[in-house]
Length: 254
Ligand SMILES: [Zn+2]
Image (cartoon, rainbow, N blue to C red):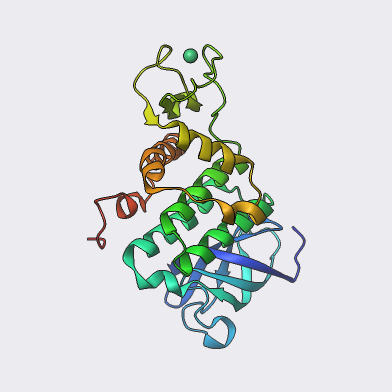
C-alpha cells in the first residue's frame, strides 16, 4: 500500500488496549479488506475519535500507512452509523459480536471484501433495530461462508452423486461440506425439505432481495447447529462468542 493519506468507510471489528491510552483496532473496509491500525490516544482523544473505536459501529477512518509497518496509523474516526441498539439486549449484542468475530476470522488482511462488508453492514443494521436477529445472524453466516469459498454443498451427495430425495429429511455433515446421503454416511444434522429449500434459496439471493426471505424458528433450530459446526470445523476452533449465542446458554460472561 502507498503511504496515503486514506479515508475509507470501515466497520470496527475489534480493539485491543495498547499502553495507557492507545488502541490497536482491527477493521474491515470494502476496498482493502481487513486492516489493523494504531490509534494514538484512541481511548481518550474525543476530538479525533469520539467514542467510535470503542463499540460496534460503521465509521469513516482517516489513516496513513507508514513505510515498512504492518499497522496503519489512524488519524481520525467519524461516526457514520452506530449500532448501539445492540446494547439493548445481551443476546442481541452477542449475535452482533459474533458477526464481527466471523468477519474478522474469515477475511484475509488487505484482500478486498466488498460483498462481505456489505452483508456485514446489512446484518448489523438489521440486528441494531431488532429485525429477526436469529434469522439475520443465520443469513450472514451462510453468505459469509459462500463468499469466502466455504459455502455448503446442498445439491447432491458428493460420494454417490444422488440429489436429496423429494419430501424426505436430508442429512448435512460439516466433514462432507454439506449434503450427504444416509446410505453413504449416516448420522449428520437432519434438516427438513423446507429447511434445505430455504438454504438453497438464500445461497443465490442478492442483498437487495434478501428482505423477502422469512426463515421459521424450526428451520433455524435445524440449520443453525450445522452452520456453526461447519464454522468450527473450518476454523479449527470454537468462536469466542459461541457460548453466548447458543440456545439455552444465554447469560453474561463470567
Ligand atoms: Zn451418497
